[in-house]
Length: 189
Image: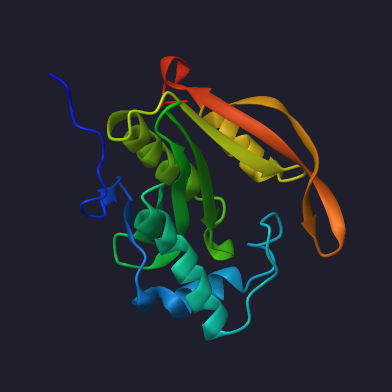
């Protein structure tokens, strides 16, 4: 039985034991402002903390842009009660080579609860089953030990270093490349 590849006809909502992954909407703008306004959250992201609703609206537009362009998805991560805890996504989907890039950010006050790993495990399964990916890759700024730990727990392997790939605050940072292949992914690490 040949299952169809995800076609962007509607935004997919996903659920885990503790989390809901859903489309980010204009109702999330205040949560995005609080989230991306926290310097700890954006420490390893190619951005400065946001300070205004207008900037939060730009992030909302950027996150929705993947779905609109049909080259990826960015989900809002909420607890079962609707509390916004972050976002995760599969981006830069290359249909010919069957790969995409994964990313995740969790609100500072929710760090250490395993939410990022739980959310990414769900979207990795979505990538294998709905997008027919063969490879998922991640770029992590050197020094982001928490993200490196999560990627290793998910079975990703470090492939190399992109030297001085990120410019932030006038300083260049090295970026580590991680990947996992469908054939080696276990999902229960």
